[in-house]
Amino acid sequence: MFDAEQDEQPHDEQPQHDHEFYDEYDQQQQHFDDEHGQQHQPDEPMFPGGPYDLSVLTDYEHHIAINVWNGQERRALKVVSNGKKQDKFIDIRYHLPAQIDHWINISGLRPLRRCSLHMIDGNMISAFAERWHAETSSFHLPFGEMTITLDDVSGLLSIPCTGEFFTPLANVNEDLKIAAVVELLGVTYDEAVTETRTNRGASYSFEWLKEVFFKKLHERIYDCAARAYLLHLVGCTILADKSFTLVSAKYLFLFQDLDSCGKWAWGPAALVVLYDYLRDSTLPATKQIGGYLSLFQTWIYEHFPDICKRDMDEHISSMPQMFRWIAKQTSENVAYYRAKLDALRDTDII
Image (cartoon, rainbow, N blue to C red; front, side, top):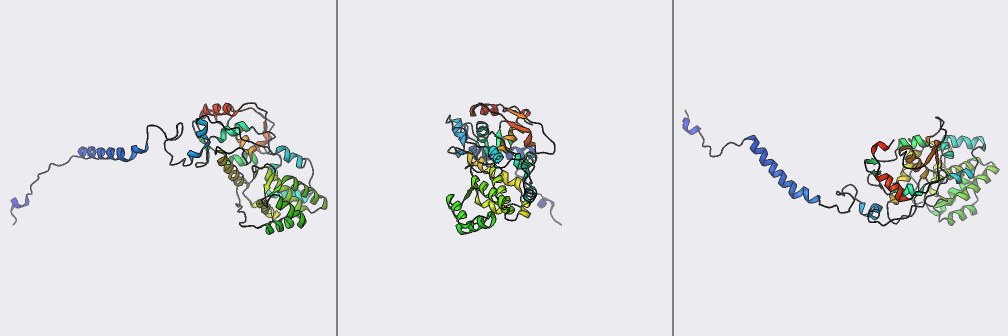
C-alpha cells in the first residue's frame, strides 16, 4: 500500500481565478495594441482632409483631391459630346438598306444611334471626377460610395451587358493593319496606307469612316458600309477616347464577322473604358476626359435630382432611359458643384 502522506503534494501557488486571468490577458492585449496598433493611427492624417489609413487608397498621394484641398485649382476638364456629330453622320429617319439595318439590329448597338446628349457639363463632370478613386472604382461622397453599375448601363442604354469580352490582337504590325482595312472596309491599298500612316496606325478618323460608309453604300457593298458605320458609332459613344475625332483601329476587329458581332458584352466594355478615363482624370496634370460622357452625365441625372439643371422629355417605356433626359446650358463652375456634393446626404439620392 502506498503511504497516504506520500500522495499529498505541496501547493506553494494559489489557484488563479478566471477573472484574474482575463484581467491579465486584457492588460497584455492593451500593451500589444499600444505597441503595434496605435503607431499607425497618427494624431493628424498624412494628407490633411484625406484618409488616415492608406492601405486601400494606395495612390492617394497622386490624387487631384490633394491639390483641391491645398487651393490649387485645376481648370474644368475638357469634354465633348459626340451627339451632334453622330446625328450629322446620318439622319435617324433615313432608311438604311435592309441588310445594313439587320446587322445594326443583331449587333445590339441600335439604341446608341439616339443615346447621346448634345451638351456635356464639363464643370459638373469635373467635380464628380475629383471624387473618383480607382482603387475602389467608386465616387467617395459624404455619406459613402457610389458607382456606375452594369444595371445603370442596361437601363440607360439598353445595350447587351452579357456576352464575350473582346481582347485586342497583340503585336499587330502596320502591314496587318493595312490588310485588315482593305479586307474589312473595302478600300484600296493606297487609301488604307494613307489613313493608317496618317494616324500612325493607331486610329481612324470619323470623317474618313463617313466617307467610306457613303462610298460603299453607293457601291452597294453593304458589309463594308456596315462596318464603317458601326465602328463610327462605338467610337462616338461607348468606346470614345480623348481625341474626340478618332476611333482606335483595334476596334475594327469587333465587326470582322458581322453575323456574330452581337456576341460582345457591350455594357462592360463601356464601363471599362469610362472607368479607365475616370482614373486618368484624377491625376492633376490631366486636362480632358474620354469615355462615354453622355452615359456619365445621365447617370448623374438619374441619381442626383438636385445637383444640376436638366429637363425630362416624354419617355416611352420601350426605349432606353437615356432618351428621357435633355441637357440644359448651365453657368455653374466646378466650385459650385463641389459645394453641392459636399452637402449631399443619403436622402438626396435616388
